[in-house]
Figure 1 (cartoon, rainbow, N blue to C red):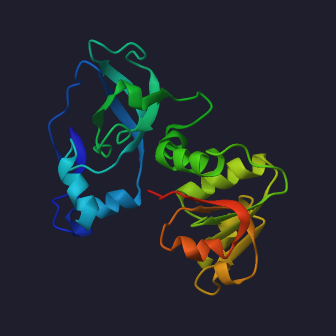
Figure 2 (cartoon, one colour):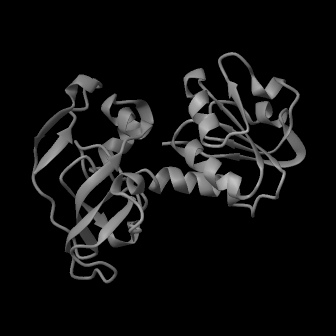
Figure 3 (tube, rainbow, N blue to C red):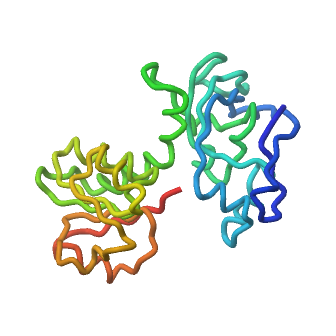
Length: 243
């Protein structure tokens, strides 16, 4: 089968489409014909052979193929699979139950428990963008209970995968949302519902004097003490690393 391969030399130029063996599902696995896959910073970390991500890559079941969030159709199922059958449209995160990549290929095997049925109203591309980023957005905003109307929420890294999903969840709860990111993303952020936007290269939101009921940090590049300056004293600072 064809796949996007990398050689661990730390260069994006090393990526190439090549041939590799088509996987066979284990008894609790599903063989998926991949229709769409999302790319994340973990994938670039593997290609660039960076620190912790390099070590995780060495533990991956698919040593030379990046990609963990996929959507596609079931081609074959293992003997113990109960929830799916060939032809079913599915999506999921290959890394959910441990280290797993291999999504940038024609076919990939996934544990039955890591997959869900794709809604008919959703394209394969939309479904592939959801698994990890959507989980982080949902957990970061709602893990401690629902948001309350008119609360003030700030999202750091608001123009990335987690942020663009989190804003949709937040606005359902009728809250006021401020987004922080690069200037080049601010127009997009306004168009998808952010009430206020901040270019972090020009302004430090922790020093503006504004206070927020909840801060969702998708970048984890600042200390908790920084966020404490911008949070109400009875608020919880929620942190979630974007992928």
